[in-house]
Length: 135
View: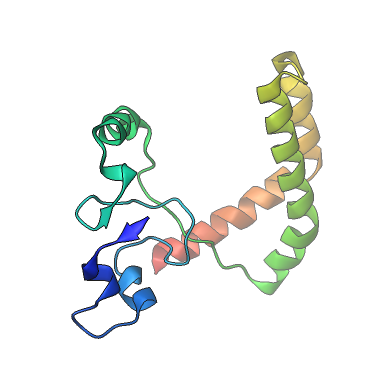
């Protein structure tokens, strides 16, 4: 990726990171984020990329959330139960996609994840979302 002078030579005298932060969702890199043609030069400006982006547009997320903040108690639960749930969900996602586990096992998966404490996990995530939306 090649950044334009607008980013690399800030008119305000800002550092590269400070200028970049004005244009990216998460300036440290990583996605989700958007790369805009008027700010960057590269393959993302090619006609094929633009065509692909149009096809994906109906499936784009409406709002990108940052990592939520949690209370000390919520973090305690997330470090144990939450970590187990997230690991299990990712492993099973991959197994369902690859066909290692058939979709006929879906109800068993749901039952297992509920027994792991999904209700408490979801309550914690909902509370964090509510706090985020208040700010």
